[in-house]
Structure formats: structure tokens, C-alpha cells
Image 1 (cartoon, rainbow, N blue to C red):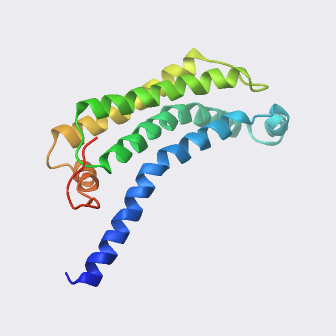
Image 2: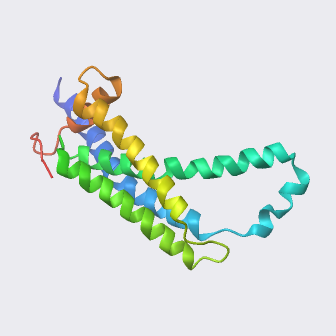
Image 3: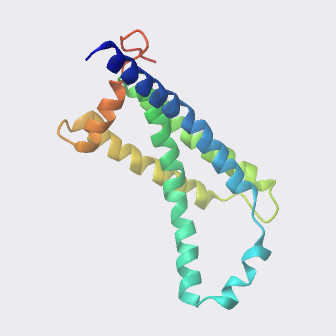
Length: 169
């Protein structure tokens, strides 16, 4: 690899690392904004217009979104930590804790949003989503060495850092 290729590679990996580190913050803002706005009048006419089965599917889909919304947050935090290098159990636990706590913050926030409310059911769905993604990561990154998903995660951990050495959190 000549100097120009190496510089291009470092630029690419630097941009990728910045993206991976910033994306959890962007996603948290997205969750906050998404949970801040709900007006039942905007969807009230849908039940009259659409087939009842379609309305039911939409409702079930929104409930399933809780299973993935905070599971994805955990995944994005995990990827941000991986962008610093190989991670251990305490960083993984920190990522889980941050995702769970933000789930709680979001539910508390919804108390103050018109037409929204705090829901223990939603917290449970959020936790299930987080622990499902945790299970996938545990089985593929920490346990299985021949997993494609685990291999991808390990490649993220191997992104070269500025000083060409791994930096651990």
C-alpha cells in the first residue's frame, strides 16, 4: 500500500469512527423528537378510512417498534465503544445500562408530552429489545468465533486509530 492509499484508508476509517461515535447521540435525539410529537387528531380519520385489519397491523407494528427502538440504541452504543478498539464486559454492561436508563428517561419525558404517558409495559418491551440484541452480540461477538456478525463487529474493533495502536476505553 503506497502513501496515498494509506492516507485514503486512514481518512475513510477516521470518518467511519467519527460516524460510529456520533450516531448514538443522533439516534437519541431522533428518539426524543419522535416521542415528543403525537397528536391523535392526525390519525383519528385513519380508522374510518382504512380497513380494520390494516389499522390493527399498524398498531401492532408500532408496539413491536418498542422491541427494536432501544435494542438498536444499545447496538449503536456498542458500535461506538467498538470504534475505540476491542471491548470487554464492563463496556458492554455500560452500553446496556445507558440504553436502559435512556428508555426510562424517554418514558418519564412522555409524562410531559400531551396525549402521551409513562408505561411500564413500554419499559418492559424496551428492555426485551435491549436484551435480545445483547444476546445476539454475546453469542456472536464474545462467544462464536466463526459468526459473520461477530466477524463484522471484530472488524469494527480493528479500525486503525490515529496512532495505529488500539485505544481501549
